[in-house]
Length: 122
Image (cartoon, rainbow, N blue to C red):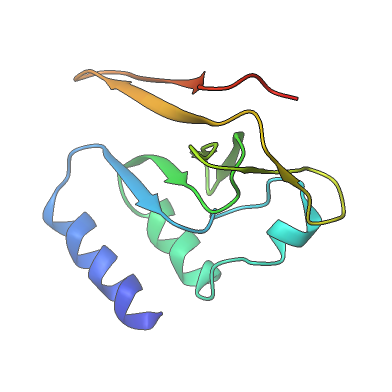
């Protein structure tokens, strides 16, 4: 919403350090049509804001699967769920394996990320 974009703008302007932004819905497509249809309501405003600030990466959940991409020249990552996973097909498939999570290793000058699976992928 507009108030959320305004809040994020204030936060980003108050801190010039490289920033990670965590949000629920992914800020870009992950290649699964039915999930990509659930985009951010204020997507153009969000993208413009991210491009204007020192955002190192965007991280989202919602899609219950691991994906990577770029938005406005900024890396974005989604994370698997510690519960059921969503399939990548055109149907709303729920997988009962492949539970996992994403971790981040941050230093003053770098960032790395990795997926850990709690149960094997199907």
